[in-house]
Length: 398
Ligand code: PMP
Image (cartoon, rainbow, N blue to C red; front, side, top):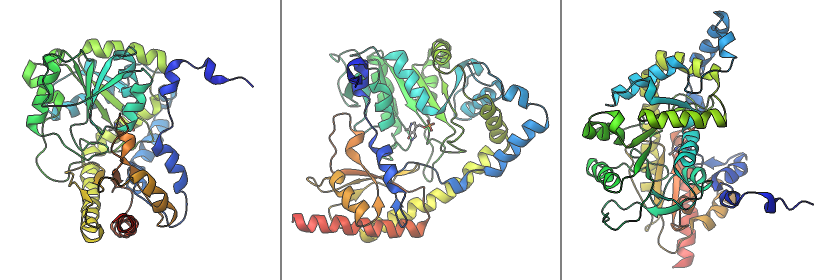
């Protein structure tokens, strides 16, 4: 039999199975309560609005262009909607600053392809979004840990800082205004780009919205063409991930190069989905986001309350102001990866162990809980079961 590994390129060695995806396969059992997948509640999708928009397109003859290839930059009315949306976030720009992508995930792959030559440095948080590490890994970077207080004088050259400023995956963390400015200062001092991954940006449940890194950057340097920040947006967490639509907002030279990247990769994101997304976004983006924010806030609060009520001493967690995730730390020495086996098998509750999100494989005592996929009663029951698994383990260790 052919030894395929001898034929695969060296970059394939760094493409490893995602712990999350492997895990999701185990969860299809009755009674399982999963806090693992970072996915929206399918029951909340604006299904009727999508159905109407697809039907209308066939009824009014637009289906001929909807079923056809289209330009790599993306469907112009969708780019125009995004220009208005970015304007409302404090980023004046025009359609030449927007590329439509098949989700933010494709944006990360393209940006890895565009910036990283094997061995180049990429700066990421510890922890960071696993899908970003997977996307970048294929281009063989060396990772450096983001340190906003770090000195920049003798630092080795690096290509970019990758970060999620609002409600990060997995930590739920939000950068303060001072941290945002420090990050931009560091990028400027070291001549790096900033990749701002912002899929959760609209899902704020409390507190004042802070300007995005791109908005701050544009205000500091006098316009998007002078900015060093590349903003990745997504419709996945607000309207639906199934249509696979996101966008990149960046200075035009970056967009022009990315258009060539997209031409080589998939020519264009699905035309029909771009047309339907435009209609749905125009008709109900704001109202829909208001509605899901209320529901997800209730779920976040239910999870926080249940953690307070049930978790044994020694477990700590944060209070994210938005997004989909809570981040837990177990006592040092505890291994959330090992505990997952008994959580799934005996307690029928699942989460994602934190170490997968660390580029150096540390963080064994951390884990991510998603609070968006089930209602408050299930959340309470799941946390109660999980707390029992942890309490048993800690009492054995004591
Ligand atoms: N970035 C982050 C931080 C995410 O959490 C996700 C989805 N889990 C993505 C990007 C990819 O989202 P999509 O491709 O669906 O837009």
